[in-house]
Image (cartoon, rainbow, N blue to C red; front, side, top):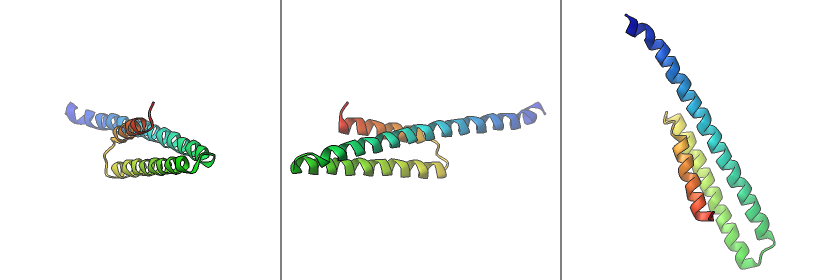
Length: 104
């Protein structure tokens, strides 16, 4: 009988752990999105005062970064709805792709 009486407590502990993991993943994702949007804004400001060829390249990179940011947000939202709480892994992959593309 004791095994059955401890099951609700274990389920509650698991639910609390999942909720904490979701909150942490959401915070990480939010930080990545905000950082990416800030970087896009800076690059577009730089493009505004750059020669035409360089400005075109900077704008194309900004659009690609926005596409990546939207993709990661959609993937995280979709994974969360589907019950996959691995948004931290998705965010880490996105962050590493941005670091490779934009340099240190």
